[in-house]
Length: 353
Length: 193
Image (cartoon, rainbow over all chains, first blue to last red):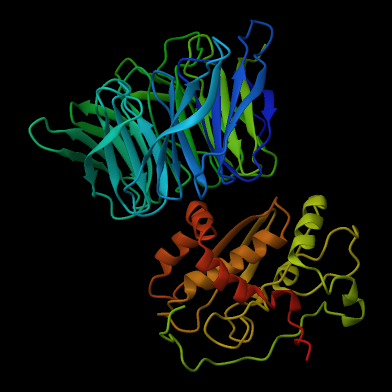
C-alpha cells in the first residue's frame, strides 16, 4: 500500500453535526459556502476563510436547514449564481432554497427558505443538477425518469416548469450532471448505462447516446472542467473516463482501477499541477479510500493517468459517499467528503515537500 | 404482505448444534436488546476477531474483551411466510458465512427458486447484521449461486446501499421486517413458554 506519491492529502477540518449518514456535499461556486445533506433530513451549511500559502482555510457552521423533506435528503446542488440551492429527497420532491433578505440587519442575510417545491417524481429522488447557465435544472429518481425543468423568466432561480420527462433508463437513475458549458445532460443508472441528452429546438429533449461498458450500477458522473471528458464511478469498482470523439459521440478512453469496493462518487477539478494537465480526478466509495489521479493528454492525444495521492480510512471505518473539489479560483486544492459517520471532512492536496 | 405463498410446504430441519455452545455462560449475553448491542458494539469497535458461528448466533466463550458482545445472530430470524426460523428452513447456515478481515459475506438459500420473499429475507439478514455488528464490518449478502431464478437482480438490490436505505424509510416494509426480527435475539434457543 505504501507507495511514493507526489502529493499528500492533509486533513483540514472535520465538520460533524449530522445525526445520520451524510450522503452528499456541494461547494457554492461563487461564495465561501459549502453545504451537506443527510438521512437526518437536514442540510448543513458552513462558511470558510481564505487560505494563505502556509495555512488552510477555517470552516465554521452558519446554518442548518431543517428542509421539511419527510425522508432522507440525498443530494444538494448550487445554482451557478451561488444564490440558490436545490435538494433532492427520498420523499420524491425537489426543494429550491433561497436566503431571505433580512430587514433589520443590512448586509446580513436571513434564514434559508423554501422558494419552490418541484413535485412530479413518483419515488425517491436521487440527484439534482443546475445547467451551466442556471436556467435549467435536471432531477432523477428510482422511478427511472429524468426530468428537465426550466426556470421562469421572472424568477429564474426559483420558479420552474417541467420541459420534459425522459424515460430512457430501465432502472433507477442515480445521478444527473450537466456539461460545464453546453446544454448537454448526462444521467447514470442502476441499469449500468450512462445516457446523454440534448434539446431538439423544434421538438423535445431526447437521448442521443448510450454509453455502455460498466458492468454494474453507475453511481456518479463528473465532467472535466475545461473540456468534454466525462468521468463515471461504478459499483464495478472502476472509474471510467469517456472522451468526446465527435460532436455527439463519446467513447471510453480509460479505466481507473484500484478501488476495492463500490465507487460512489467522482469529482473532476482543475487541480494545481505544475505541468499541463486535464486536471485532477478524485474518487471515493465503500473502501473508505480517497484516490486522486492526474489526467493528461499525450502528444498523440491518447489519455494518460497517474495516481498522485491517496488516503485510506478517510472517514475511519465508514463508507465515503461523496467527494467534491472546490470549484472556486485559488481553492483548487481543496476537497470535501461526506461519509456514513455523518461528518463532512475538508482536505487539502499538497505536493510532498 | 403478499397473499401468495411461494412455498406452501417447506422442509424443516432441526437446528444444528454448534461446537462452541455452552449454555452455562449464556446468561451474560442472553437478554441483549438490539439498542444495547449496537452501542456496546460501537464502543468495542476494535479489531476483535469474529467467526461465522458468532454471526450465525452462537457465543464465542472466553472473550478477551468483555465489552465485545458476541456479535449477532441470524439463525432465529423468522421466515416471512412460515412459522419457522431461517435456520429451520436451512435458508441460512454457518458454513454459508465467510469472514475475511472486516468483510462479512452471508450467502442464503431460498426454499424454492421462485421465492418472491428472497429480497425481504436478504434485507432482514442485512438489517440484523447492521444493527448488531460493529461499524467496521462491510456486509455483503448474496443468494447461493443457482438457488434462485432472479439471482443477479436480487443480489444487486440487496447490496445497493441507497435502495436499502430507502427501503428502511418505508414504514410498511419496516413493520414487516421487525416481525421477522422479533425473535432474532433468541439465537437459536427455544422461545420462553
